[in-house]
Image (cartoon, rainbow, N blue to C red; front, side, top):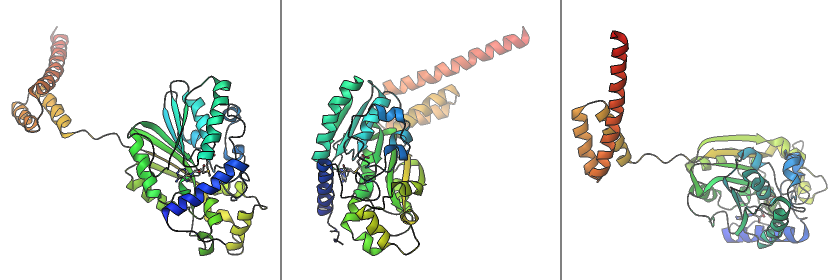
Amino acid sequence: MAKKDDKIGDWHEIVRREYEKIAQQGGSCCGPSCCGTSGPSAYALGYEHADLEAVPDGVDMGLGCGNPTALAALRPGEVVLDLGCGPGLDVFIAAKKVGPTGRVIGVDMTAEMLAKARASARSFSEKTGLDNVEFRLGQIEHLPVADASVDVVISNCVINLSPDKQQVWREIARVLRPGGRVAVSDLALLRPLPEALRQSVEALVGCIAGAVLVDETKAMVQDAGLVDAVFQIHPEYVDRMAHWSDPVYKEVLEALPDGTRPSDYITSLYVTAVKPQAALTDQVKELIAIGASVSANCHPCVRYHVKKARDLGISDHQIRQAIEAGRMVRKGAAGQMDELIGQLFG
Ligand SMILES: C[S@@+](CC[C@H](N)C(=O)[O-])C[C@H]1O[C@@H](n2cnc3c(N)ncnc32)[C@H](O)[C@@H]1O
């Protein structure tokens, strides 16, 4: 069994070289799970016939372990980013869902995968009339994407392949706009793997040795500042992905204690989470307080909040706008009171 080098650069290089081969040969080296043409048909992972109909031939290489575009519930007009897009299966499906007013960006570090994806983009455009996909070469630990520019991040069976998963989650939080969401499928562990498997390069590229415990993923999502996180495990997908003739699958079976199955250890994991809306600044809070103080006719409150606003550097012009907003509320309330008194007393 080959030994896994701990260094991040070497890890990237090992993974990149294997996916280069898969892109060129149509794949063969990889695991029982997501990473190779021996993987499951997209149908086994819950993809809809209608979604697959529009995708170009050859982009479903059986490299996924879930269905992130369905999980994300994409809407027309959204900007979507697919981490580790490979030949582009989920990019093309997402592109149909977000339509001509939306956009989908796929990022992958393997140039040969992107070459396949870009070639497919041309036939996708001819078939659908859509011109809303873009592929960028880059690592998911350092995304070539601007801050707060994306509505939805998706990813399918890739984060387990990263040597720095915490950094990937930080990058997801950076590129999402406030209120944006992430929907990821990946492989994760239900319990630690035997050491022999953790050291196997084949199992790493096969999306197994690099996988971490579900609880570790939960901690990374939380540390990245994402909220409303939901984690769903699907060990049954691992059973569906199992190919007994696959060399990596055989290696996994041999390394596990007798009587146990890969799905006792490995699961497909769905993660959804949201980037919180930006908190109100102190300045905005003071302006709201001024408006509320005026509408409540509270003279000491107005004095207090106007002073605080000036201390925070808010201009008199903006303070007057807040006062005017409070006066309008007060005037409306006074008008309603006059009307009520009129109704009560004729
Ligand atoms: C298992 S395949 C999944 C491909 C695609 N998401 C799908 O479901 O068809 C993993 C892909 O992630 C890419 N990849 C792995 N590690 C990466 C990293 N650190 N940065 C960017 N891409 C990476 C590989 O080049 C490969 O194309």
